[in-house]
Image (cartoon, rainbow, N blue to C red; front, side, top):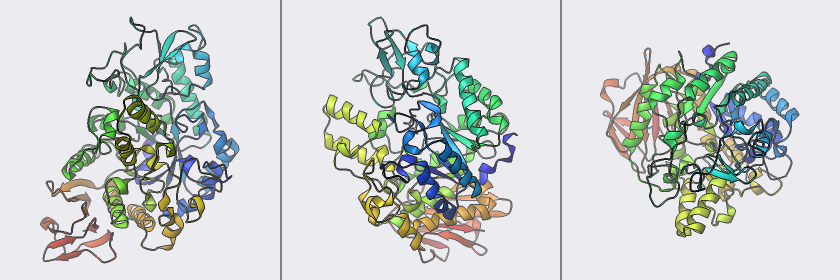
Length: 566
Ligand code: NOJ
């Protein structure tokens, strides 16, 4: 079957990070049975699809993004039998299941790598990227890894280095080798034949590296290793590999595919997702996620910068406009790698509910498939653990080692960056109720619970008709009821406004007007005249009392959002 049915265009996806979702057996780690227990909660929310972060066998150097066997389940999560039960229970409830596909790299404990490192003439040698030391006996090039330090690791057994863009326990696969590619395609088919409804493809646009693996330009002379994304992102054979995958696998199934693709422009987004000769249903682009980071590579993410609303408008509008009718957007503000959106873009102290709902409205009314990350529907917030000892994420721990231990940076400053941007913000256990450990586990959780679980939790949300949860539920339902939300053409209004983000969506004879106040101030704006206000109905808004519109002036309270249909 081709991808033509496109059920994913009017779907809403919910991402589960299984380690932190629900623990059914008291070992402190979430598991598949724990997910099964919570499926009715997802049905209540109204989502259509679950994207499951990796559940494959893994030594967990990067919480499952380091896979040692693609066809086995991680011991802590359960087994294939439980997985079969999970997918059956999901399909019985009308939910679809999208699995994470991590094929830029494996774990160093994968049997392919165990073989590969044994000798230069091992049949698996060429499954990975091996190079001899350079003339000075050092790393083959100067690339820095995403998680600090060189992207190369020396291996005693054969006296060569292997490439790892992520941790040294995540060696990059060599996609130039057709045998590697075909083994991956077969593995994908194996899962699809078991009933999987799609894949989220981890850092998929890093699979093709520039020939010769040249040195990256020296941007920061004080650093030994440099940022080389130009040599491995959207590389020369990326589209060729993806077309092959499409032909051999994707086109044979009616599935959702979403590529995690950093470093892409809308132009590339169109190329990857267009209906004629694109290769993916949609992609995750990260320009809006980088808005508060200093430019110039991965380290910039820790260097927080102020940004203006007009910058956000420019980024979002570009993607909305350029992909319209030519490709497909994904819409997200959170995932397991990002801080919590209400803490980052809203105000989690004084306007918790209002700002969480405003952000949800603003995002869900755009064109594309919305993604909700576990706990986002409760307005879960960033966590401020007092000590580095409380953190678990390998990216955070490597950063600490490099900056604080090796280079002597001020620990308080680094901890501040971790509080604002660290990935563990998203990975604290799901807050189910106000009992010990937020109802996540009866054991000791693998990472501490956010202390605000006594107020922010699912049980409380389900009891409160005005909760963020029910607001999300309503947004999801609106998407089902009004196809202008799915298909409408986007138009930014009030372009220069630094406080209110407003836009229209138009489809056939319907127009949607979305207004979102991104500030703590009460603001007055002139009602967009061309829309008139006679036939408009208020579809959704985030305060209990309706927004005030009088004499063509609309008053927006702090973080107020309102959507009108004309
Ligand atoms: C992106 C994933 O989202 C992240 O969690 C992981 O660390 C890297 N890719 C490496 O797989």
